[in-house]
Image (cartoon, helix red, strand yellow):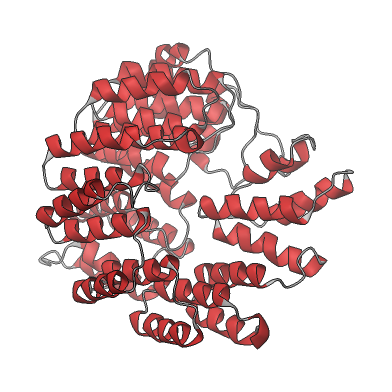
Length: 513
């Protein structure tokens, strides 16, 4: 049976499943154009989707809502400034505060490259008059996007009279982001000398750096120093300390921190729900589910209206992690009656119910998500595709992929990798190979998602056992064409294939070891 025939057969078998999703309408927002792979073309033709040349997606959207326009732009592209300029050409107006709000939202979503793109444009067009606060934000973004060396170069280019505490704090952030303890400590000493080190913010940056680099003695010394100087802890401080104690399995230390917090509640009245949420996660990792449950309940009591949806969305996932499905559904019911929901909430609840293998609830919530017309988000169908593949229900998994394509969604690396992994588990390597090729075709350089590489490794092990050099060479050629492996790794991989007695694991070959 030819591969195209196999795909056609699968599509026919999955027709009944697609009918269950017949309520799903084409999403309002078309996806960003990309190179279409052979398999994707076959599936589109079979589903009746006509491929037509696409214009850039932002040309199709109305100009009435700048924020929606900007935040649906793909993260990996430089489309944000063209969107703003198109908005202006269409008669829209922007000002300093609106643009700063855009940057703030990009930073909160960790879309630092897009935030830097907008801020650089603001400087170029004169929206920012080199205020120290804007310089500090730009410095922080340069460090996150381009690295510490470029951040230091930019810092040195700032006139001395504008190097305020904000700028030094941003440079400290850059050192922490690069996990450069020595540079961070030097900056902190300079800040102390200039009188810029009195705030809790700079101490928290250094505290978290010590935690991330496992410098626990330095962390304890800094805590003592903060206490001696009368610097009150905030939610971030407590969260970092709880995480540090958890990293060393010091549950007694966590208990003491919680007790300190509750004993001095008047002093720490400003602390929010995140402190208990972090503690719950740490207790869970230690297998202390009852303690985790108790502090999650305390976390709920600290939720304010301002962060209500964000908090409830996060806590759903924490209840799921300790096996409390009834709590997940309780919070979901609250969320659905609280007002408008966004894709993040649907992602959280679908991932949570799938932990209990509750596919019926997942499908119903999926149906609800699509009916809200929030814009296409590949992560949501991917959750269901991954869950079905893990359970070996490949017919259902492929049907969700078909639905994605029919609705102008673009399957990504995870989509194809889930399918490949599912077929590997079933021992159907011919299908697994075809889908891993699709995964390679959409994989970007530097992608380290482990399941992709594990699936690829299993396939190479299989091909080596079969002596199928032709297929091996085809896969290696595809990997090289996408710059996913270096020439050196390519050579080592071919030598590994030929050496039938080699005990080296192919993952180690991919890593270049």
